[in-house]
Structures are given as structure tokens and as C-alpha cells.
Amino acid sequence: MSKARIGVIGGSGLYAMRELTDVEEIRVSTPFGDPSDAITIGALQGERVAFLPRHARGHRILPSDIPVRANIYALKSLGVQWVVAASAVGSLREEIAPGHMVIPDQLIDRTKGRQSTFFTTGLVGHVGFADPFCPVLAGLLGDAATTAGATVHRGGTYICMEGPAFSTRAESRLYRSWDASIIGMTALPEAKLAREAELHYAMIAQSTDYDCWRESEEAVTAAMVMATVASNVEMVRRSLLALIATIPATGDCGCADALGAAIQTAPDAVSPEAAKQLGLIYQRYAK
Image 1: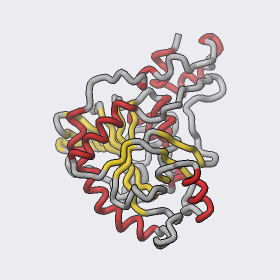
Image 2: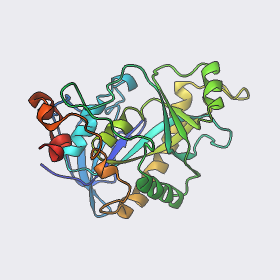
Image 3: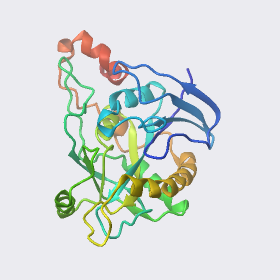
Image 4: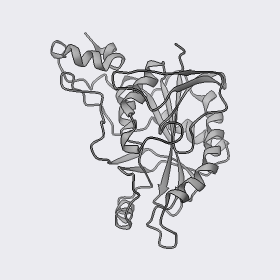
């Protein structure tokens, strides 16, 4: 099976990477079910890159139903160490206009009932998540988006809501009072699971609208979002082209050793079933 060091998770509008060459399409099965879609592996900027459309080709999967554990596990099984995620978001700040790119550095979780951990009864872990995005990859991604010609906002808090309906005006105003910058439906549990899988993970968030807080704007609709997504996606593509060759072999951020102090279950108390299910995520810490 082909391997790739870098993974790209495509969001709304980004269902394929036409820039890849020497392409192979792979179906991966995991202990957590099947990923959203087949994973495409190809060459880009001298690297092997694995691409996975989060919502599947044709946008068939609701945010709440994305098989995130399978997606992250599948990428890790292919050798991926660095993951760049693209996401369409609404803006909660006047200065983040539709068409701008945001490289968030914080998250607030407003989801409900999503499977947000690989750990289970029989193998307990509490991963550090104070800084949910890889600072090394986020910095490189901001540089690449700037090189590509985007208006880039470095840092900011992403509110992850359940969806699929958009916010009420009261909710939108509440999130602004929390000093949040953008709102979307897919950063979680993706970022948490990437941390548990010891992957370097960062996101390029594409502002599509002003949510519904801005009284001078029409309240957000799906049609409004998709109208902006098309132009945003081209900017994301250019940003990825500028990014890939700059990703280092290793980072000094600690992402690749996130489980070092996280596992709480005593080695002799780990259940064989749990150890098997967590597989390649747990194997380096198995005694």
C-alpha cells in the first residue's frame, strides 16, 4: 500500500486535488469503520500527499455524521504525520471579510454527542489540548497563504457548532461576546483526534459570510456560502501548492509525542480488546 507523509482533509467545495500526479486511489478499513471516502495519494511538490474529502465526493455526509475517528486513523495508517485541514466558516468579526483566510489557534466546542476520542473503557488517556493546533504547521500555513495572495488572519478562536442549521442571531451575538473569530461545524472532534493520533494538525479556514450577527448583511444561507466557496477553494489550492515543500521532516512542537504523558491505565490493566482497537495509535506505548 502506498504511503504519504502529508495529509489534506478537504472541506466544503474541496472534494479532489487535481494538482496531484502519479495518483492512486485507496480504500482503507479501520477499527472505527470506513473513512468518509476513498483516499487519493499522489505526488505534489516532491512529496507524497494523501487527500481525503471530509464530506465525501458530492458532499453526502452531514457534519454530525462524519466518521472522524476512521478518517484520522486511516491517514495515520498510511504514514501521514502532518495534516492540513480546510474548512468553510462564518465570520464573527468585522475585519474577517468573506474571502479572507483564517489560521485559527484556539477552539470552543459546542458540539453534542460526537465521538471525540479513540480511548475507551480498558484504555484511558487524557491528552493535552490547551493549544489545539500545531504551531509549526500553522505558521507555515499562514506563510503559504500569504505567498498565495490571500488576506490572512493568523490566530483566532473557532467555535465548532453542531449544525446542520446555522446559528440564531442570539447565538451569533453570544459567540462574539466570547471574542470568537469564526464559526464552523467540522473542526471538532477532528483536531482532538489528530492530537491523540500524534499528528501535526492545522487548519486553513475560509470565511464565506458574516454568519447572522451583522444587521447590515442578509442572514447566512447555504446558497450564500456556496457562492463564496468556489473562489475560496482556488485560494486554498494555491496556498497548498506554496505550503507542501516547506513542511519539515520533524517539528519541535510536541505533537508527535502527545500521548507520552496521556495514558493513565496501568500497562497490566489495559484490556486486550482496547489495545487491539487503538492499534497503531497505542502500539508505541504498549509494554
